[in-house]
Image (cartoon, rainbow, N blue to C red; front, side, top):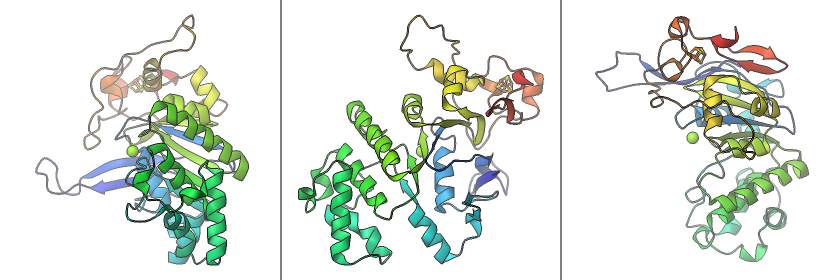
Length: 314
Ligand code: SF4
Ligand code: MG
């Protein structure tokens, strides 16, 4: 709730003292058990920072993070360790997230070792079982990461993350470094694992088709704020925010007879160091009017669970 992550900016004469980069600027959302929320946005919008703040990899600057009614931001070291068993993160780059000097066998078992769980035999059994669950044979367990393809490495990362029986996976663009054909296989795997283990996902991506496939709800971020949020079907059928419409315009439609309200974006995404005043989107928005340039619109409900931050819907 109202999650914020500000980074202090140093060493630039352009910016006065105590200047902050507001990477995440007061965003709120819920994820229900066994469901997926997709967090969408262009690079630099703050979506990865949200994932890292939840994991405590970046300390939140403000707001609240709750896991089953417990306040995560006030956890001590032991509680944080327990939390990290329950909530695991999967990163974008399957090439750099595995230690090249360690065998797969070691890499997958390591989380249990760190947490002191199970006997060596039990750890081995669990590693074998999970590698098979993600579609890899345990015959490969003595190999090194470089002997695997990108898709296989991401499967290894997933198996490793599942070793601690987490309830939530935060997936930060887990398929964007993969070939398109491999992406689909890994997405199917995420779906299958969600059913099998009743996992809850926060799925971060810039790719709308990836998020559509997996998400029950989606939230669209622009320069540190959520600009639109709702049930996935509703947002895809009826996108309201001009930025969401612009993002959707960029994906080809399956049915050429469907008329899409296309918006071409002007200009580049502004620097998060110096976002436009008022609605952060106003300098690229074809509908911007005077009030848009002065005060930032709130994220308000327009229909069942559908919220948008735009003066067009006031
Ligand atoms: Fe465009 Fe104004 Fe809506 Fe922002 S608030 S998206 S500038 S119409
Ligand atoms: Mg990112």
